[in-house]
Length: 132
Image (cartoon, rainbow, N blue to C red; front, side):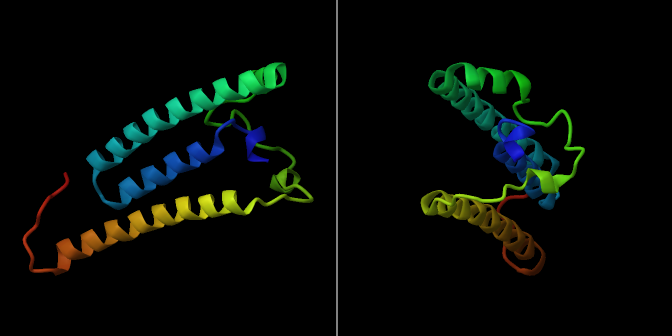
């Protein structure tokens, strides 16, 4: 799956989403600030997770860590994406719920950004904060 391409694909995709959300605000400052904060938080979390997994899975994880980049894949699958899809999948409801809430929070943030843009453009209310 995606963990064969990089060790932390969720963090990678979250950073791409954060960049997209920042760009949606049309603010270079907010985009850069989002990427810096996410980069710091995800790098720290990835380092802690790698340390935990190395202690738990000893040599197996060390081999995986040495062969797999942390955030960005070095190569893409040549056989196509279908080979990365497993035949069966175990779903844990609490983990699925957490993923749903995480995705929902990003969508809520996107909706709030769009609401702020509409407020700025349509409402005769005073502008509280203008981002560069």
